Image (cartoon, rainbow, N blue to C red; front, top):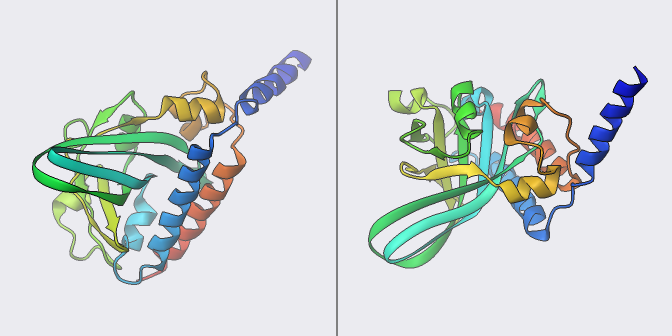
Length: 230
């Protein structure tokens, strides 16, 4: 028994020893929390409350960068948290990338929010990488207070995607994008032996960094508040 207890303590200590986020990762968590708070404050143009209630995971990519000259693309980094018991899991750091082609000139930054609507979609995101639209069904999500105007494709999708530009939220087509865990960010937060699945499923003990605790509290509070708006 003593050996088991000592082993558990050492596991926790070795995990928490890695909870040393860079300033960039701390800013990523802070900005992701701000996006969630502003979603709550969007009276008519946010994500419907019933979708928040159904979502199994939430991915937030603040300041997704889009720049193009003839050949364009989008790339960004953010975090994902999944429902765990009555609350939300420690966040997993994520990367998203999408290529695009066309006569595009200019640069833009948007905030991206992705709702993962079922366990199947969550399992796919925990893989090494997932191609949106090919490996996982993703649709531009409906906006407003309810899902009455949502299409069958939106209601049956594994994931729903949203963007915010200049304070306005709207559905966005992410087909062709690639989403994967950020191995370096997760190693800084939890140690290299901890996988994304370990973090969101709670299969191994992790010590959540202080900066991540604020994001998770914001997510839990704002999802509840948003779901009450009808």
